[in-house]
Amino acid sequence: MKLREKLPELVTEAIMVALAVVVALAADEWRENRQERELADRALTSIRAEMEGNRQELVDNREANRALLESVQEAARTDSIPDDFSLTYEYSLLSEAAWETARVTQATHFMPLERVQSIARIHGLQRLFQESQDNVLAFILDVGTVAELDPNAIPRRARFPLATAVGLETVLVEAYDTFLARLDEEQGG
Image 1 (cartoon, helix red, strand yellow):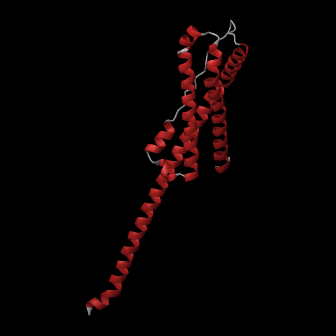
Image 2 (cartoon, one colour; image 1 turned 180 degrees about the vertical axis):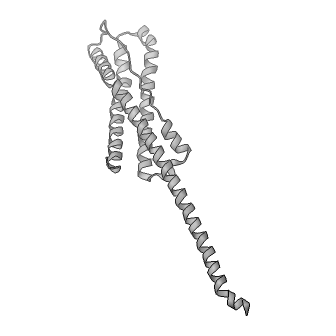
Image 3 (cartoon, rainbow, N blue to C red; image 1 turned 135 degrees about the vertical axis):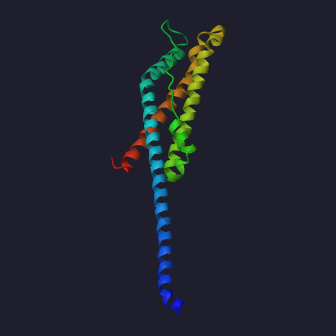
């Protein structure tokens, strides 16, 4: 008899315990989701700052590298090297630290897929640009060999790697601008 009298009380207590467990699990999941969003937001803030810094590095070097390309193209057209000819290329040191950190910490798992794909495409383009700069630098470091064979060939041989680097620099700045503008639009500012 006592069990029958206590049964409603035991059922109520069991329901309360089950409800408490469900609420605790929901709170834990909410906290975990919040931490994941915060991690993704911090990573995106770092990636944004990195892209802005990389963009500025490119913009700071753009005019000097375009002037160099014009000089090289003019010397290649005339097939002679002017007295003031110089192969001074402004190398842009671009960072990938924020992107790599986001990947290593798995913050990218908590970002929208389209955003991660956009960032990955930009970093792929950034790596192509870095390779093109390395090609320019390799040519400049080896210019003595070209000069020994035919000094007037220097502009003709420098033209392609330099044009590639300058062209990719323009494309990369545009990619940064597009991504940053879209991010501003999404974030309402």
